[in-house]
Length: 307
Ligand code: SF4
Ligand code: ZN
Image (tube, rainbow, N blue to C red):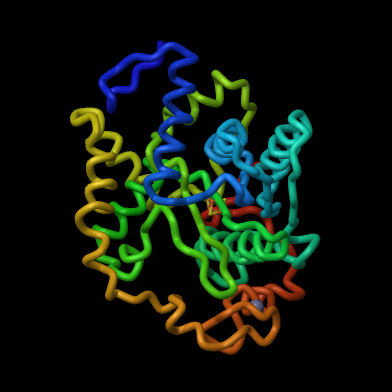
C-alpha cells in the first residue's frame, strides 16, 4: 500500500499508478498543455521525474520522444546518460542527444570556472537553449520537463522570499510558444517527489538516484527541506501554496515584464539566430567565454568532487 497524505488515502500498486497518470492528464487538460495530435520532446536527465514523465506521456497516448544533454559533470553525467539510453533502448524509443563538450567544446564545471558563477547558472542557460533548438529543429510542438510539485513549490518559495516579481510572473505550468521558442510544459506539477519515486519503483523504471554533485549548497535544496517540514505537520500545504498562487496571485504579477520577455527580444542573435535582447544571445556569449578553456576538475565551493 502507498499512502498519499495529501489525498488522505492509501492506494494499491495499480490504483497508485492510475492516480499518477490521472493527475498528469488532469494537469495537461487544466492548463491546455498538449493535444493528442501534437509531438512533444521530453527533456530527460536520467532522474526519476523526467523518465517517469516520458513513460506516463506514452501510456496516456501522446507522441513523445526524448532529448538528453550530456553536461560533462564527471561520473554523474556518465551514469545519467547510461540510464537514459537504457530506458530508451529497452522500450524502442527515439532519443536525441547533444553532448556539450563534443558539440560545443565546453562542459558545466568548466563553464562555472570560466564565468565564476554557480554551475546551475550556465547549466540552466545551456539546457534551455539546447531544448529550444532541438524542439524547433525537430518540428516538436512542445518541450516537456519533469518539474514536480516539490520543485515548483520550492522555486515559488524562493521567488516569494525575495519578491522576484519578474520570475513570479512567469512561474506557470505552461508557457506558450513565441517566435523562436517552443511551448514549455510541466505536466507533473500535481505530483510530489515521493510519488514520482514510488511510481518509478512500481513501474520498474531504473533511474539515477544520486543528486547532481553541483547541486551542493543550492538554495532550492534548503527551500525544499523547509517546505517538507511544513508539509509534515500540515499535509497539503505545498499544493495549497502552489495552486493558490496560480489561482489567486500569479496574474497580479503580469505587469512585471521580465527582461527576457518577447517585448525586449527585438533582435536575432548574430551567431545562432535566436531572438535575443542584445546582439549576441546568452548561450553564444557563454560559448565565446569558454572557447579554448582547459577542462577543469569538478569542484564545488572550491572542493574537488569525487566522481
Ligand atoms: Fe545542472 Fe545545477 Fe541541475 Fe546540476 S544541479 S544538473 S549543475 S542545473
Ligand atoms: Zn546565439
